[in-house]
Image (cartoon, rainbow over all chains, first blue to last red; front, top):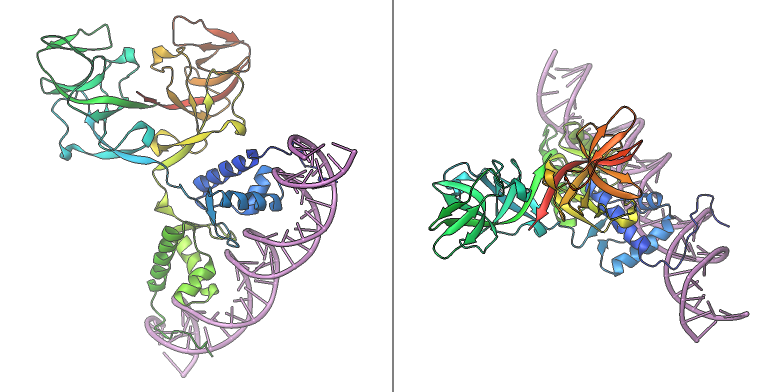
Length: 205
Length: 205
DNA sequence: AAGTATACCGAACATATGTTCGGTTTACAA
DNA sequence: TTGTAAACCGAACATATGTTCGGTATACTT
């Protein structure tokens, strides 16, 4: 027979339980700082320790993680390191003065690799000139350092010694820097020093 | 008497062994990825398990590290915490169907601690119903799981089996879920299941 | 000299833990 | 229909592991 609490379910569901185990272990490690025991997993997923043990063996074979045999709490993910990169926070945009000098680096923020890459930098937005693009006062913008830009790119540019975030448009004889806020007018200049292009954005509530 | 291998040394060397234990544990964790057992330490330093156990208690008291009593290989340095925390990505908001089921967890995203805490979850925004709040289609929102909300909070709520992001207002006899987009009207309901509150946001360009 | 605290030991204990084994249920292919 | 493999179970085993206990040696204090 079967245990009272046993969940009767389809048997040929290869992989689903494995996936759940992976997720549970990741969560456990992330929260506890050390890996769960076989029975920890079993209890959490409503399985028998033996069943979990079997799955663990498979996952080990599949190379999903390392698990020293007969060694308690020894699960380690092969790709355990989260893909994080430290991006320096340079200062506030529209705060005046160029800010790419190293001296101005005050801190750095770890970001997932999908949202930034080496060489990027972060600026805290000041003001509402880009609000129609969903870029609010206090938001953090990740910039990719580059000196040129294409039409429509949102760039950080140096204007009259101030760094501002604007949309970039190149015309025949001049460049337009367009705010995304009807309150402000286009800035028309002959040339402009582009500091970087918008890569990603994040915000704290 | 004393054991053959026993190292005869000065007894009033308070701290030295403690220091060696700390260093050994750090090295072990750094190399193995999980913490050593009491006997691992004992063997490495030529001490008895009981002695190590005693030191461990002191170190725990001193706050050097955490060590869950009776839990194997559970030593964690207090300052060990990476500044990053893995937040699960649950799915798309407004994508229909409730999504807090574990099955839907597909991946997780590392975020700096300032932007999320354990227990938070991430949802990818679909649609433009919150655009006036700077929340765009495709943005990722970090939610804090909670079942209640206060006036003005931006919450994820379950409406007709769909998860949507709206501003929450409680009235006497009903609840208003207000989009931040003039194209859409307020949703007035008697009761609503709140899934969480907006914590932070990030966006990829 | 006696008392006391520290650092250590080995044995013993209880529990945690990884692992094995035979058996059951179900899906699916032959 | 039969056979087989996957997914699961409970019990049992052996070892690992945290912990306790009584005891010894040394240094320092009184």
